[in-house]
Length: 128
Image (cartoon, rainbow, N blue to C red; front, top):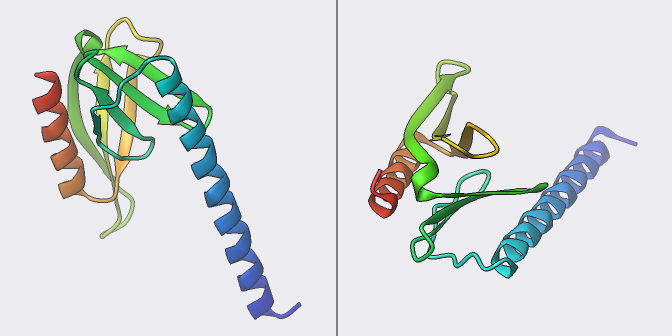
């Protein structure tokens, strides 16, 4: 096989894995809703960050399941970033929790403005 064929094969595999991951996340979202979680706001991110204002709950989706906790368990939220190179940053919202199965959960965003906007919306919705 030539190098062009390998590149095409790699792109097909990556697309397949991306679709598979999307299907798993979508399955977790449907399972969450089947348990009664009413999504009022989707703050996107990776993993997905969902809010239910009527139930005063937050859910974080991932391919292997979801973490669900109440607004009262959210102690604080903050934007964090790591610089990997001069221009490459990893922006995310850190949710600091109490009484949850995990003490902290991070949700990644493409860039700082998106992370900041999601944090503002989260604070507005939860009152934190």
